[in-house]
Length: 114
Image (cartoon, rainbow, N blue to C red):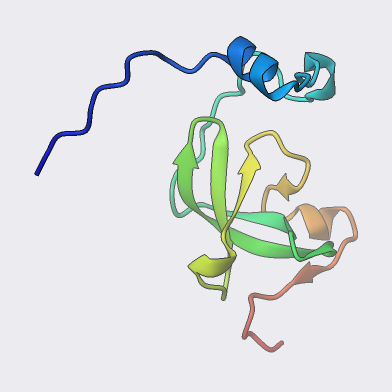
């Protein structure tokens, strides 16, 4: 088995944009802070999250992965095919009890009947 040849150069956005005749999106289009927020979440923590398939529903979710300031979330009762990512400071995630406190309706975990 042959080893892959090492890359002789690194990726250059400037060169790529020129070659593709593309224009970079200005930084004013991005809402993220230049310094990412601290991620104090841990795998297994529970929270309330907006269902990405039905944005009018808030569901119980579990943190199943972490990458930098991003959380990989899974709606309780779902499988890994429906996992989704949110930034730790997203308005689409809230602490447990937020729905009740704000008069919203929390959807039970998938498969649960109340």
